[in-house]
Length: 260
Image (cartoon, rainbow, N blue to C red; front, side, top):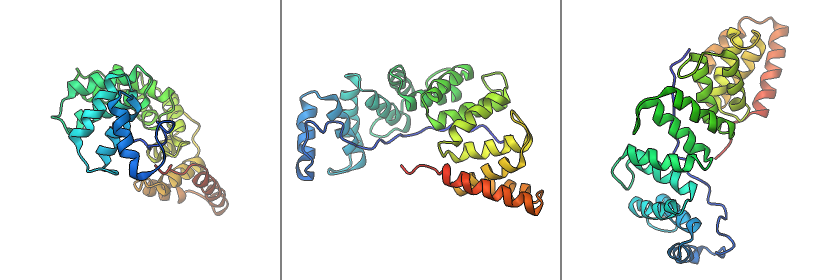
């Protein structure tokens, strides 16, 4: 098994129209109207203004101002703002890095079912950042985020089950979560699922499916999948290779990595 890698996500959201009922869609006045609504205590406008400052969109990039508006929105209970504020503390953007503050804001967002906050909180527990290292607690929060459909958490939970970190080793559960993430186009999960099929861990050994998932992972950017994919391919007859290639083509079309 490859090394367990638990990943943070900054989680920049698409802007969408969170306050579209209050703001006209004119580029020249959107910042002004956002500021007006934000100053009136509109938590969604405060959050979006924080995003504008963070990304430098329509206004000069300013992480400190971004934090100011995230904090105002977060204090009003906006889960997206709580998540973003926590991640600013993790990275030290606009504030001094502070894992204690990060875990506090992740916690607030997590109890509101914010899946990225749940996943990042799990990672904090896994690495002992702002809290005592606690792998069972990490597994708990990865599971909450996984149940909410978050592919990164599903992948990490699958890894924990495949290795037995924080949970009892269970290949079937590992496959279950790898499969959920893989079908969302998460390349690392597609790679691990391919390996599970090749080794017969948690599933019946199936080199054709292993080949197809590894091909899909490689196509989706997980380059390390290519070597094992090629190794499995050498085991096939001409007829078997044709069937494996057809399955791989189907998976590649069906399970691409989503474009943010």
